[in-house]
Length: 265
Ligand code: NAP
Image (cartoon, rainbow, N blue to C red; front, side, top):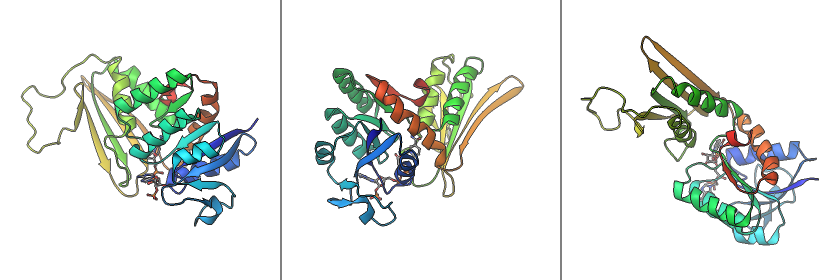
């Protein structure tokens, strides 16, 4: 049976690629509607650069969810609208699969609570690349042995949030195995503010934003006489599509919100 999907952000880099993925898997998925802040009352085929599909497009998520039946809602937009869309989807009993990054802890808590109340599946994944999930898992293992660790995450310069959701998630996972410590010299001073990066329980996160990049992360561990680097590169957005595909299928089996692709693989 085909899974009916509504997608927000169809003109975006991730959204347009996700539509291609849905079309390449026509036996598994049907795109029933899209949410786009700049188009209302048209069909997808009427928008420049979009595939030739008679799929209705709405500006208003409420109207979209009310007028179109769907099993799953995919959000690939920006944090504010992503949160509003996701909340509206849950209230309409449509299971969200969220790739949008930058949700606050409170927003995630709120969505988790709503899903729990409704016994509705949802997946929020700051990184849909399977290799990135492995990078996080390996980092969690290594942090048990190497408590001195810096994360360097590098993304394209159109990314709105810093540090990346993946970097924060990696630090959170490492916190579970790492012995908490403040890194560096006890008398260390920042001569220029921010030089040592953001701090999570003594671990440092550094964010690089550059045109030409997609999504890259290095986790560098240091011990006596050795360093260990775990590195992942998303060379293009194809790297995220398998994770979205798996999530759209898996979310149908869930009755709660799951945060992080590693928890469904
Ligand atoms: P993008 O190319 O900039 O696309 C963003 C989309 O959101 C566009 O369609 C844009 O429409 C729309 N949008 C922008 N501001 C909006 C607003 N205020 N209200 C509603 N819609 C708005 O970005 P992208 O690279 O596709 O990334 C989309 C999201 O996915 C980001 O949050 C990014 O961090 C995240 N991401 C996640 C993963 C993952 O694996 N989870 C991987 C890559 C990216 P306009 O053209 O009108 O601005």
